[in-house]
Image (cartoon, rainbow over all chains, first blue to last red):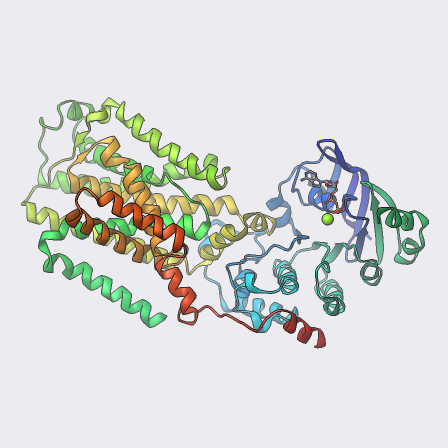
Length: 247
Length: 350
Ligand SMILES: Nc1ncnc2c1ncn2[C@@H]1O[C@H](COP(=O)(O)OP(=O)(O)O)[C@@H](O)[C@H]1O
Ligand SMILES: [Mg+2]
């Protein structure tokens, strides 16, 4: 089995704060990989490094075997690696359908594509995906008027519209009504099985990660602490200490 | 909304055709009104629709004016000789005049777009107030630079080739061109915002970082949006120069503190980021401005200032923006008052 993402010895500091130190990890193709760790342990920083949000201090990041650590956010997104945001980012003054329509893949966008109309096929696909995440009734509402949980679902649907190979999700269940979480886990799993999207998920909620991921990494103080199947991670004394120590 | 849309367009078309017939004394003012509509629409295609508030769009107006003048003269004579003799040494035949004007107008549009494309690569690194001030700097320095450039007449300016015909014909001729320019701009943006381009620039306005993260070609869209603005502004500059008959850097070509600011004020008054807002705002602003010029002479700037202050302090959404909030259904916007927790619970139950 091949790895879509290979991170080797990546470090990143902000001034004096070492957010990531010599981090190495892999995301196997077609699977769901989890990333856990206490608040401030450097999870989001690692995501940002992978998708080209900021330059890294040292190390190598490969996507499908290709070095991408010098590429910018747009170029990496166009390779088929997308991320969602911990704080949820959508286009608030546009309605849900428009949010999806503008999220079509731009991989092979030619200059004149900027002026193409949206054909029926795309609108149908947008509506279908909104239905998939349970937002069909809201499709013509301004997305900024949706509840936080609904915005998270919308952001997820936007990512699916983009047909990524790999999707990096930053705390997809944070701030979501607990009654909705099972539905969301189910949808994430189906995105993986139905659409064949490799998932790499940051999750603070242990229960969610253990249900969702088939292998889990744990970061603590910017360093990779442990890696293994959920059962092993759950009972790993270092992981337990890191979590207890952080609270 | 569709039928209202058509009625408004028909109304404007009728006024465009019959306005100068009914009010022949105001032909110049109505021509200027169409230029204002063009100003507001080109400004808002960036400011309101894309979230990039340029304070320097007047730059393209002035450059278009100079490009057109230089083309009109340069096709047939040496520009340096012409400007040093302030245009008194030559005459243009009818065909020379019209060919020069036609080519000049086109060159003004294309030339201004090329300038926008070149500037875009540097200016679009700036965000928010830095972009506003950066563009303002471009317009201000252009005024100063043209003032020192003797080849195009320097600070004392240059006379534009004289229209070969009666004054009445001239004013109708340029009126028609101004109206056509505004109408073409309007129809062009109507089409443009119905394509993917419209959603793309709106996405950049709402969250450019997100658009980057989704792989959208943000710089390409921003640059092209500016080129379109510049194209129509360049043409409007060419027409306005000919309407005035004289090009001079600070008052006529690069009037940053008047026309340059009016562009912004008109869009805000009508409702920035709405399609009709800039059009409505420009017409209202122009009518108010002309009325205060006539009836409150001496107080006209105060009156305009008060309108701008009321607009930005109490009425930020502008006229059309306000109507959209009041009657969203008419604008094809759906609102839902029964929301949130309840919905989520329902979804959870599914
Ligand atoms: N842009 C930034 N500037 C300065 N410090 C940052 C920045 N981003 C993250 N950090 C710091 O890096 C550390 C790791 O943060 P982060 O990656 O957000 O953690 P996590 O996502 O695991 O909660 C924290 O100490 C945080 O304050
Ligand atoms: Mg985080």
